Figure (cartoon, rainbow, N blue to C red):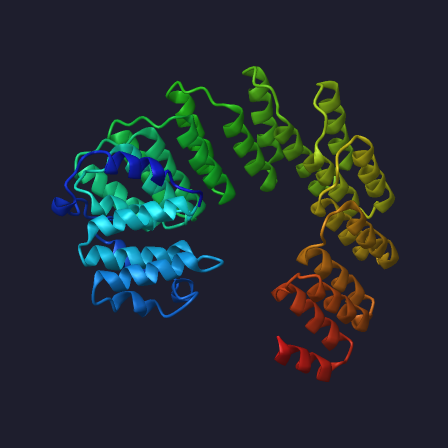
Length: 437
């Protein structure tokens, strides 16, 4: 996650004139369980440069300072996780002034704090954190996919009489949706309504997008109808979510209806809206419709971007029209848009499926000339094309080049080669490769 605004906290706390000898923890859910949060982190992460148990062996403050000074003198410096472990140990010794002093030195040295170290600082002071502080912590938990801790902190807020704002509600909703907790997100949305905190269009868009991605399209449309019934004007984001969901599920008539509704409501189609439609028509095999959409875009003064061109290239590749796909790639370059690695991967995959490995390799060598770096997908696609033509030894040579370039083969890469060995009757080589994985 990004750097938290710990400098602001530190300045406001230190200049507040508080007596450090009287400070004590004041918040229970996340703040008093900071040790639990830290212990739950990966043991490997906590012991990058030593035994994590060393932090529990202090006999006095001098030992803590000695270790701290050694840590800040290291290059590169230890991770924030190790500093946090040290700070937590000193808090348990109740030497709060030292925690603040170390925190200040870490700031000066440019050590970026995370949600745990910030928790420790807040826990050191005799204050009740405000909504802004809690919002920062909740956002930190959500960014680290620690949604349970975020919800726990939210519940504690409400119990202690804090009034969550829309930012906090939306942060929790987004966290629930991104971690696949669709049912909990819907319940959370209903809870907002029951508590009188009316969800805004961002909240509804987040949940509708989540429902669409999980193919719960009827539920998404029901919620969409509810939004309109409440008098909330749907924006382009919510329409794009729905149209994308409908297209992915093959419900093109419903997607068209929503598109017409957008036009009727004077909502201008964005580049993303058009690209959704181009991609849908290409995958459906109606490339002429996709071309018509691109023409419409240009007439509306909207120039296709790389993502649109990629969708069109993929459409031609799916129909084995590689010459047309190549022309689109060249047109994109002519228009001033640099192809990305996905553009090349789509083309290479198309050539491999068409058994035109020579053309695929031409593009592969072209990638390095553009300044792009072939990724795992690039190499895996080429290896699959080679294996399908019985050129397993050539695929193995490419694997060596892949590793030498710094790309790590994944399970897909290894499975392709294993399959190639087996289909080529090279069972002994397959076994050796499997054992080496």
